[in-house]
Image (cartoon, rainbow, N blue to C red; front, side):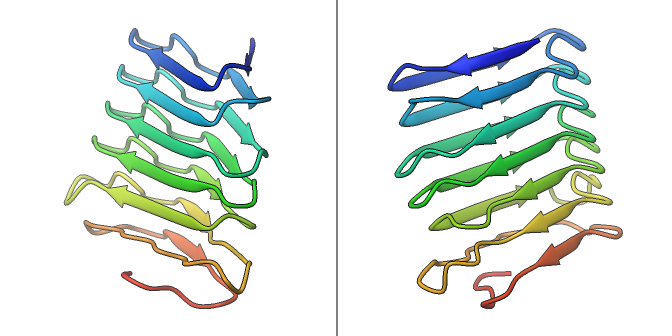
Length: 152
């Protein structure tokens, strides 16, 4: 299944087990995007692709394996992204790519292996504020940055 986000304010919630598993989400014209994955494996193996400029994105992975093995491409100039992994293994094995954006905040739950085996690619724009906040112990989490990080 593919979801296209066209409206200014877009909201998607996947609240039952495996409800959005392997779904692809494309943002076409949304400016404020809220993605809530609140059930077990609700967005496992999913794909999010956002390319528009000057958007705000809030992603919540709030249940076990909710966003595990999912890929999030936040690729618009001027984007501001908050990505929360709030449950046991909620973002395990996932990918976040945020290359040309302004700001990204990735919050991994403390002591729950929320971001184990995850790859995070931070902004390459030299004027960007690459703000990454990772809390909790992570195993084999890879963070890639060209211009340095603050608040790691």
